[in-house]
Length: 292
Image 1 (tube, helix red, strand yellow):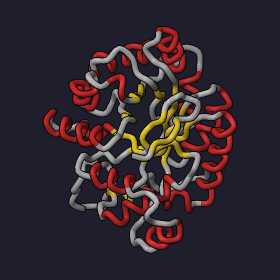
Image 2 (cartoon, rainbow, N blue to C red):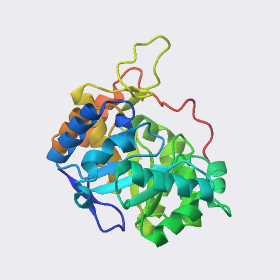
Image 3 (cartoon, one colour):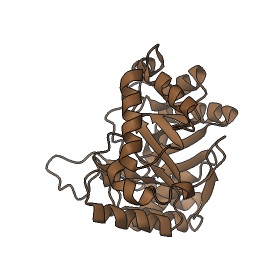
Image 4 (cartoon, one colour):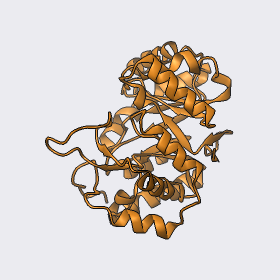
């Protein structure tokens, strides 16, 4: 399994993160099978969130037994110090662990949400307090949508987050404004040695009206191995990307791991030729508004 250093955090994490959103609505048996598959294939970077349904509960039985062998990250979507602190402790209890390696302020994709988190009495204060207590080792920020890169660049000016997590795929990066803002974020993250971790690598498009939803993801994912290979190649071709999260369906995870294990068998030109030719490939976040 390809490993990459997680910014200034002293850890070599698997290039693919086990995106535990996939466990939100599965049985414990299904969850155990997927987690075991991950561990057997060298995946040591697990990323979950308090609001991923039952994901933290499903992780607990196995993760608690291999805690020292993995990098464990979770998220709080609360915006006040008081509520975020309660949620952090709840996450530890649900996962049956004493601490997490990374606590992320979740779904901070606009300046408005960033203001809520970083204001007096905001969630960032809870994260800092939890870090002082030793139950959180590092603090990060995540965001969805076309404003995420701009928002996270501003976040790094306000606080030295150890990680950022935001969307990246071939289509989104082809949008001039998103490319410009993502590159600016990458540059600042490199200056601060902040780990850039990405999501939505294999997202194809929003589900169509009346379309059969074959997967648990809230968007239509790519599921053909060759296309997944190209999507994975694209995000991992960024040397500054520390890792990417797998899609939110346990049935897609083996194909994603397979693509990572064969990373390098496809070159940049081959990946671009394939991704550029796909019909119906678009953003899953609606029409992009100005992000300048």
